[in-house]
Image 1 (tube, rainbow, N blue to C red):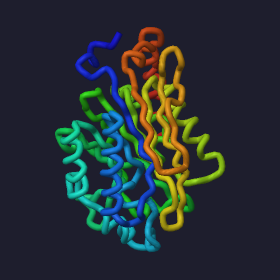
Image 2: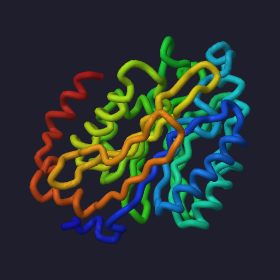
Image 3: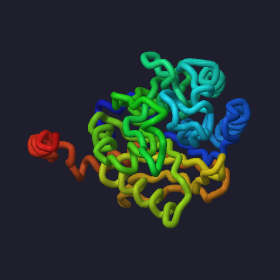
Length: 299
């Protein structure tokens, strides 16, 4: 049975992840391709469409990344306010088709001139539902994010007609599992991970395993949307994945992409998800007193 707090929401939702190959530094080309993917996803009945981290501009920094006191030149030139031209363009489609789109992009920092955030905007039929700004920024030799961006400071859940949705971005999801747990405790039943995970040995297994683990440990659905192909010098492995509990299985992979550009979709049933709450009361049994005390010792 669906708990009282969730009964006003739709009981099922079809989610699409886009294995997306950017044209590095070309927002116009990327936006045009995103619109085409949205049309394709709508044609197969999708309600929520997720694009990967920095899909609007490309993830990789330009050569001056980390060598100045502001964001790299490519991302600074690509950065926009939210709402802004690109989110407004996507909003016209979300309104037309009554859908939601998770769009990741460089967002101008209104408080720090020359700096920007790695952000994901959730855009719905009503316009901008909210914006998530990446909390944890990668450092060299893995990434130049700490030199180019400002970290966010909030972990919101976003209200939609399919219920509360949480969004995380890459490093926040892969290396900080407590963030997914907090989103689940706040009521999220779907967590979207917009990621730019680089190609490497065994990375496909990482995508599959951790996406499934986050779903299993929190009894939620999880959708990870990854970049694919090569940008300026970096390559990405794709393998976007949607996973989650389908009673009586705990969290099978529902659908996964290859390393090619494509869309994948899965229809998620919240009645099946909530069935686990009838047999596993982990939220009520969670020892928050001990957990909070131990976290406090780590400060």
